Image 1 (cartoon, helix red, strand yellow):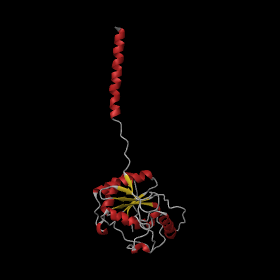
Image 2 (cartoon, rainbow, N blue to C red):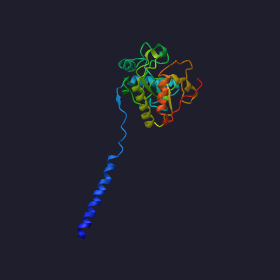
Image 3 (tube, helix red, strand yellow):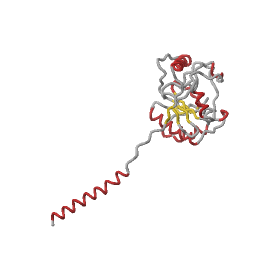
Image 4 (spheres, rainbow, N blue to C red):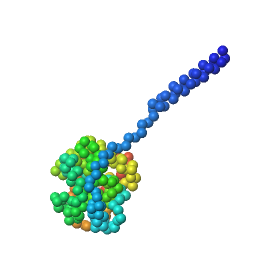
Length: 237
């Protein structure tokens, strides 16, 4: 009788443990899923690398062995083109297209960016994230550029909700990967960075006026990533 009692007590204890342990397994936190990025390389061969080194020397006064950068800034853009393929093929060649006479005197190095975001929010990586791209005057040597397909006529803030969400997630991804990043700016704000130590442009006459990616778009992205404490450009320019 006593043996039967202890046997029953042991069985009860085992069942109780099983009951207690089950909820712990079901409450396990799922791992954070990585951001989905599709690699779609632009042409970045020996010619483009050599032209980038030359650009760095001419405009920033630096002689470099490679074109790697330490990212300090994320710059958001629009392409002023509503079609993804047309946007991509403007960035793809190594040499500047003939219709870019506004910046051709500065260099024949083609414009580029590390990322291109389609209208549906799909993120494409165009080149190594820590290689210098030509996308913003004065700040290329410390910045990662994110182009968004849109901005019709280079005036309309028509970027989609999907692009907004993609940019928010991309900013989070980049800040986590590169803790050195301090600033988040829109292309239209780049001149305000002239008062910072990150500004390197030696040609005082080399400036363009930009309106991308729109004040509202930047405001929405900044609100969504405010916990990252990324700085805005200084005011006054």
